Picture 1 (tube, protein in one colour):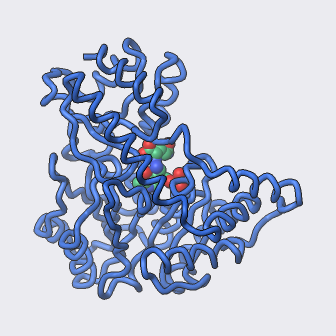
Picture 2: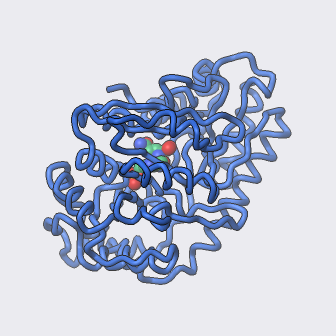
Length: 373
Ligand code: PMP
Ligand code: GLN
């Protein structure tokens, strides 16, 4: 397995003292009352193994949260708490993919998917989304489905492009899944980071999808606490139980004090959500305006912490990896090249930047990028 591009770029940022606009983590914005709830849970003694599927309070809170926000009718039986969405993905893949199965990835794809599919004995079939629209084309997925296809891994909203797929695109995925009896592993960790007042629809809510979808979520994204690594799987009781069996032998259970704090945060109400979205929308706009003024061609982004820049359209003759190396070593700013997100047809003229930063971090990063060209 290769070193993840996120680790590679964060280590380079630390080595060169660079502004880190590579790996996606915010440098502001976590609710202080959730930190206090975690501290209290540590001190008051919630420090031994949690039940493997998660604390009942958190499973109930996750089920209620998705009922409120996404109209999903869930109970604790639909939920398995994991150590971040990364472990949710691993459990979902190990539970459903068997040797010889094919799994469709829409590229550019988050870097965890392909290695996990292969470790489960599966084969990866890449379907390339094309910039700058990055649309899901029904025909392209249909052409990739064969007799051995077991699953499609969907990531909506989409990292690294920042796209939120529309109703037609989601319907195409759902209809193909139903017609071919496929599982959909839906990585929805960015579901709440919606810019410009966008609305999110979970693919599990589409006709025929509730029994074949494994949805992955992350408290790290919801509460801007990416290091906490509390995530979950949401699925039918049958699929959730299958995934929970895999989860037993990955980590067994996740930190109980952090689960308590996340349950508290989810149950507290949703007053923080709208200000968070507005804050991230302003951060994206600030970074995009700064980059534009520095001569960079910025692609649109409707969600996530990320926007992409087209180096070729910015008049920069370097490929993404060469630019990333030069930017971190010479200009003092870490970015993420897009080519590690696809094997068959990688975009070599695009980089990803994390805008989930304070104004001073954005300004320092943009100033460094202005020097990097
Ligand atoms: N999936 C996607 C698409 C992500 O962007 C991330 C992290 N940013 C994850 C999964 C992993 O989430 P976690 O940190 O909760 O493991
Ligand atoms: N998901 C984060 C990103 O896309 C990084 C997570 C990680 O470092 N594995 O930047």
